[in-house]
Length: 233
Image (cartoon, rainbow, N blue to C red; front, side):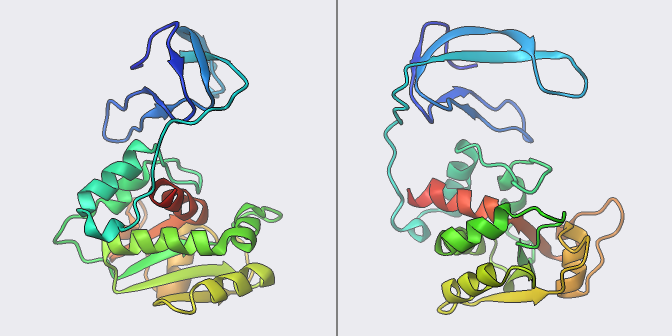
């Protein structure tokens, strides 16, 4: 924790700092006053307690001051990666690892494909589908930021054919850029990271291996949207 009891905080303000590589800062979800920093039961299968920061809301939901970066390509890549990290963005696909772990590729690393996973794996899940229908331009803008960061040879969006409205929205959003929308059959579990990489590239990620081992970075639709908001809003 980097705040104390009785401190007033605003929405988006950092209230706890990251203390490890696979770690991210925590931000206040709303504005109010910190009334406790103590161990409390947390929602975890282990049923153990965890250190919690308790905020009494003021019902104002007042944000911190923040500004967009109009020309992120004029910045150093390391600066943009740090902004994404400080925004607390983790992978939205399930594992929850800090997104910058994937994006912080070594200068000598060769990334052949950057893949946006828009093929929701489980039946009836429609979060990415609806997000793309409503915010395709913002999803693609976030993907373009990642594209600039990792410099892939090609950028692909994999999406299942049972999402016609989202497919149309993506095709419109990518018509003026070098991002390819690839429509694949709806077949479980095509939305799994390794399965989607195999479908789109023919590459096999070995058991215990990482996509980067075969020159691929795979990111989630929600992650792209969040990165766009961190940079452009």
